[in-house]
Amino acid sequence: YGGAPGAPGYAGFAGQAQDPLYPYFSAVAGQRDCSCKMGFNEFKELWAVLSAWKQHFMTMDKDRSGTVDPEEMRQSIASMGYHINPSALVVILKRFSTHGMIAFDDYVACCIKLRTLTGTFFIFVFSLTFLPTLI
Image (cartoon, rainbow, N blue to C red; front, side):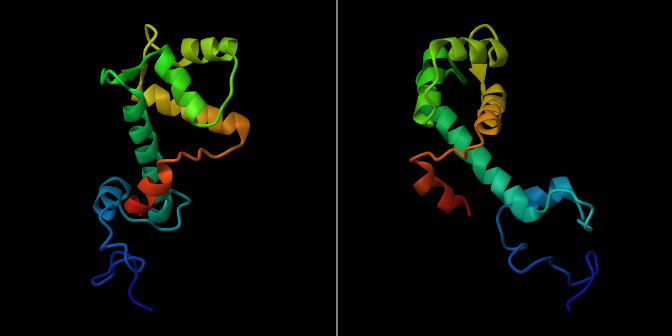
């Protein structure tokens, strides 16, 4: 059956060692031993989602400031398929912005909150071409 994790010649599941993301995963994760922690495939899925959000953030950041302003955030939320009223946008901006600007980390937190509250998955038009290149 191969070897035990950590034993000479053990390379994990087929294809893991050859995957370009595996060095990032192993640097952070170390050995995995059914400890109910994130596995490599889950890490790859998370990486793909974060990469898609990063790409979307960069697309929405028209002035390349490294943040999105209220109008860019409104456009971003709309492009994700959400139709929110102006009052809801004000609440989002108060919660996730600093001096009216939303940095990438807060943008991700906002995306997670929207996804959690609505129970839907984000489907970006660009993800149909972007995500398969990551996997």
